[in-house]
Image 1 (cartoon, rainbow, N blue to C red):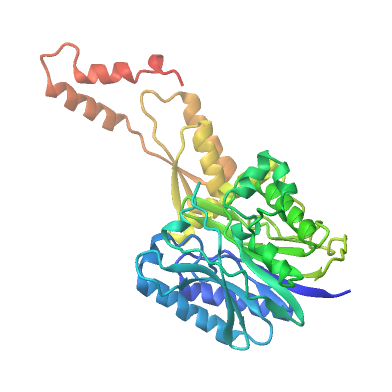
Image 2 (cartoon, rainbow, N blue to C red; image 1 turned 180 degrees about the vertical axis):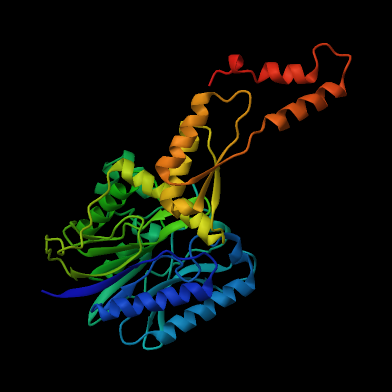
Length: 411
């Protein structure tokens, strides 16, 4: 039975930090090779981070990404690395790029695959920047084994197919049919014995089960294993969960990396139509409890937003209510209590319970609490409004107080 030792590099990349990403990529490559990998797989648009959006409209940025890829390629030895990058197609106009995967070994880029299906729904806007690839090849030969490379939605087929499968299980049974346009089908016809898919797939609650179901269906339909590598970490309004995994040819998940954590792992994958049916020891990380999954998503998104934007500390207004309490707890888990500062701002409307609850919350979390009374500011503003119209019995200040009085609140 033939098998390949595949290195999965699940990294928390920094969008636009080409030099920093190169350092992470080459370090992960070396680690995977040291662990015995025969090929090392990274995520979609590894060099730039995902999604680079309008940075791709800057020619100097795209040129910088090409130079960064060259540095990565020159670092490689005989073990191939599959690295995502934006490739200039040479076409004119603002939409001139391919979303590509470079196959690097022996100090050079030896082959390139270009993404076919460009999602343009939900949080995706890829048709603004990329033109679709049309060639299902080339295959990557790893120690005599032909491997098909594809990018994210190419595994599924038409854009949105993976989402549709969640509500229509019959879609899974149509894989491999006459209207199945996935490049993986063509790669299998070309002789591929393993499908490698690089991804920039944002977190969505319950999404991992759908990913695995579709990948397993694709694996069993095609008779080849699937290697699915995703990035991890927060980026602006998105958070990526990682959850990279491997299936065997029978559609069994045999390796799963942890959610919301960086990891470099080597998984031995049987190739061809055989199935090991037995998860690699210690490599099948259990899925998270749904509440723990959501909590970790919030923590990672908060941590990366703060750190990637160069901040060190955060201030949280504490009212004693559930909203500010949840935000303070998330921030504390994300940054550590020494980097979170609670602020209580009592006024004439603050109850004693609000003040004591805020104080108790700060003590429980181990964060400092500063009290800044806002009653003087409220009184000054009310006086300013009164002076603006002294002859009006129902003064603006009165009307503001009436509108915002506790008796009129309904939430």
